[in-house]
Amino acid sequence: MLHIHRLPGRRLRARGLRRGHPRRPRGLIALSLLGTTIAATPLVYLVVRAREAGWSAAVETLAHPTTLPLLARSLGLATVVTVASVFIGAAAAWLVVGARFPGRGLFAVVAPLPLAVPSYVAAYAWVSAFPGMEGFWAAALVLTLCCYPYVYLPVAAALARADPGIDEVSRSLGAGGWRTFTRLKLPYLRPAIASGALLVSLYVVSDFGAVSVLRVTTFTRAIFTSLDLGFDRVTAVVLSTVLIAVTTVLVLGETLIRGRHHNGLTPVQRNVRRARLGSGAVPAGMFMITLVTLAVAIPAASIGYWTVRGAARSVPWPDIVEAARGSLLVSAAGAGLTVLLALPIGVLAARHRGTLPTLLERVTWMSHALPGVVVGLSLVFLSVNVVYPLYQSTSMLAVGYAVLFLPLAVGAIRVAASHSPLILEETARALGKRPSAVFATVTLPLAGPGVAAAALLVFLTCMKELPATLLLRPTELDTLATSLWSQTTVAAYASAAPFAAALVLLAAVPTYVLSRHIGALDNAGL
Image (cartoon, rainbow, N blue to C red; front, side, top):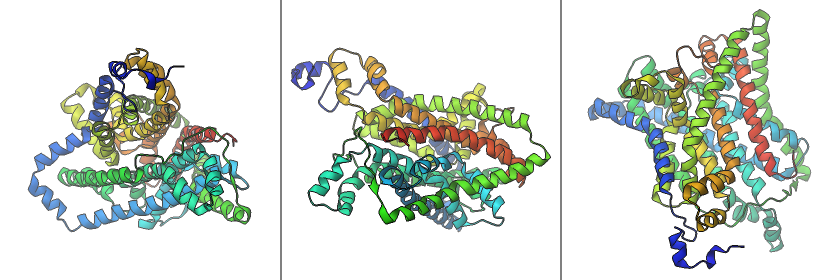
C-alpha cells in the first residue's frame, strides 16, 4: 500500500502536493471563474442601470417614505419564516431519522413533499380553500410550510451520516442527553442548519408568487410592480441593489454560523440507533400529523377539489400535455447547464481553502436572492445588446435558471466532495496523473451521488420558477408554471387546477428521489 506521507518532500513538491493542501488546478479555477461570471451577470446589469440613473435618483428612492417599511416587512417575513422553518425542519428531521414512533417510515416519504409545491401553487390552494386569506401572517404560514424541507433535508442527511457511537461514548463519560446534544450533535449539525436557513431566507426574500397571491407588498413585489405597471426601472434597480446588500449580510452570517470544522464527528456507514420516545411518541406523532396535514393534505385537497370541478366542464388535455413537455424540456436544460457550471466551483470550494475559492462560491449567492424578474431583465438586456440570436430562446432560459439556482448545485456538490477521501486524489497525483485525469477518474465518481442530488434539486426548482420563465421563454413555449399563472391571475381556480395538479405530480418525482437519497443513508431503510 502506498503511503503518501513517506514520499520525500522534494518528490511531493514535484508532484504538486502539499499535505492537506493540494495544488489548485488552473483549469478548475478557470472553469469556476466562468461559472461565477455568468452568475454575476445580473450584478453587472444593476451597476449599468444604476450609473444611468445617477446618485440623486438612487438617494431619492432610498429616502422615499415607503422604502424603510418595505424593507422592514421583507426582513420581518424572512426572519419569521426562517426561524419557524429551522425549528420545524430540524425537529421533523430528528424525529424521522433519530426516533422511533408509529408511522415514521410514511412520514419520511411525505415530509419532503412540500418541496414539490411552488409557493404560488400553495398560496393559490389556501386562498381557494379559505377565501379572504391574505396578509403578512398568511404569507408567513404558507412560506414556512413550503420552505421547511430546505432545512429538513440537509439536517436529515447529516443525522443519517453521524456516528451513533459518539452518543454512547459521551453518555459513558457521564454526560446527559442535553449536554451530548449541545456539545457534540449541535456543532455537527450547525453547517446543515446554517445552509438550510440561508436557503430559506433567500427564498423568502426573492419570492414573488406567494406574496402576490396573498397580497403582501415586499421588495420583490414592489420591484415587479415598478417594472410591470410603471416601467420605473430606477426604483427597481435601487430596490434590487438593496436586496444584494441584504444577501451579502445573510451569506456572511451563514459563513460565521457554519464554521469550518465538524468537531470530529466523522460521517460513517453504520445503522442509526433511534431513540425510544416512550410517552413522547404520541406528541411526536401528532406533531408530524399536523405538519403533513397543513403542508401536504390541505393543498392537495384544495387542488383536487378544483380539479374535479374543472373536469366536470372539460379538461384541456392537449394544453396540459404540451405545457408539461415544455416544463420538462426547459427544466432539463437548466439543470444540465447549472450542474456543469457548479461542478468546478463546488469541488474547488471543498478541496481548496483560501480567499479565492470562498469568494467564487459566495458570489454565486448574490443573484440567488434577486427576484426572477430582475434576472430575466438582465439577460434580456444581455441578449438584445450582445448575443441577439439567443433572445427568447431555450438556451437563454437555461442560462437564467443557472444564474438563479447555481448555489443549490454548488452546495450539494461541495458537501459531496468534502466527504470524499482526499487521500485517493493525492495518491493519483503522486502516481503521475494529470489534474484533469484525477478530476475525471477520481473526484467526479466520488462526488457522483452529490452531483445527481444537485441535478434533481435544480431540475425541481426550475420546474417551479415563474418570473424568469415568463420573461425569457420563447413566445411559442408554454410551461405548467406559466399556464397556471395565466389562470390564477384572473381567479380561474377550476381552470388552473389541472395545471397545478400536473405540476405538483411531476415535481413530486424528483422530490421523492431526493427523499430516498436521504433514506439510503439510513441503513435501516424506510
